[in-house]
Length: 233
Ligand SMILES: Nc1ncnc2c1ncn2[C@@H]1O[C@H](COP(=O)(O)OP(=O)(O)O)[C@@H](O)[C@H]1O
Ligand SMILES: CC(C)(COP(=O)(O)O)[C@@H](O)C(=O)NCCC(=O)O
Ligand SMILES: [K+]
Image (cartoon, rainbow, N blue to C red; front, side, top):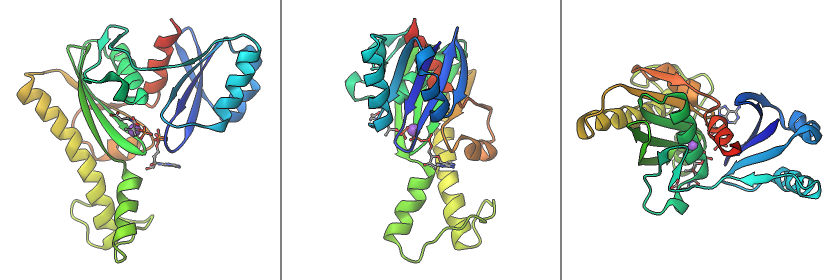
């Protein structure tokens, strides 16, 4: 059994993996299982103290603690970045996970976390690159911080055109994110002659976006973990 870790900019998530089967667990449960873990594989875009503790524990017992990194090619997928070192590892493992789960589709991989990232993959192995935009919370917070008259509420209505400030803000930000996903799909169709496109949504705001995305898509909350499990081979 392996421990997979997704250390994002907002939160750190854990999963246990055995023979490619993935089970999400709490930090507490992950730590309580350490003695039974053979290897730890980590995607991190930010440092967390708990990771240092796990690493020390693992190294003391002579067990592998693997920090995943981007390579030009992994599991048959070619990285589209010119300088691969600059691509976020969370994006790269999500791309690898997506290609594993949907080997016969052209893909738009959306990780709606602190930032929302979009990555395009054609011919099930050719990563073209992508976009980084502010995530939903960040987008709303940044306007609220700079414009004192703009405020949000937990009760804003779902509507196309907002009829009060919280609703205008919430719907504007969500539909901005939706618009960029649709733009990526349209670009793949028009400029890359791609058919058979699948949009995959992961990250903390995946469900919120799913409700407003009218084109074919799938929720894949464990995409990063599926990608990390390719690093155990
Ligand atoms: N209960 C929640 N706690 C924190 N963030 C949440 C919650 N529900 C939705 N979100 C949204 O999810 C985002 C974080 O998603 P996540 O995938 O964990 O990000 P990251 O991978 O960057 O750590 C937040 O920016 C916020 O917009
Ligand atoms: C774009 C990101 C901040 C997204 O991080 P997240 O929102 O998932 O925490 C992360 O993938 C990152 O730091 N990327 C490095 C820059 C790049 O991918 O080009
Ligand atoms: K993200």
